[in-house]
Image 1 (cartoon, rainbow, N blue to C red):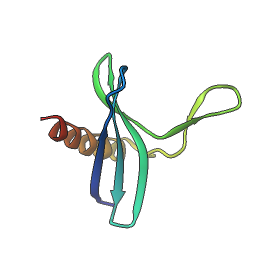
Image 2 (cartoon, rainbow, N blue to C red; image 1 turned 90 degrees about the vertical axis):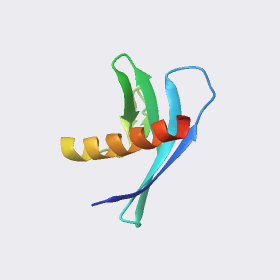
Image 3 (tube, rainbow, N blue to C red; image 1 turned 135 degrees about the vertical axis):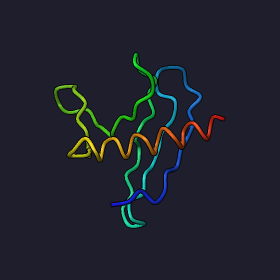
Amino acid sequence: MNITEVRIFLTTQPGPTKAFASVTFDDAFVVKDLRVVDGKKGLFVSMPARKDKNGEYRDICHPINTDTRNLIQEAVIKKYQEEIA
């Protein structure tokens, strides 16, 4: 699986969310609404989520393993940093 495109949508709203992103895999599958978040330990990527009936947020989709999570996070953060430079 290869990431073939990353799109960044900067936000001007105050708060920890700095941008939204969409990631395309193998020119065939897109995941939208990932968030670039400025957390206590620096930037990280949050997967798309929605609030359940108990008021807790649940990921709609997410990587199953650490290698895939790192692949996505590195690609999104790199593109975000290019956008703000």
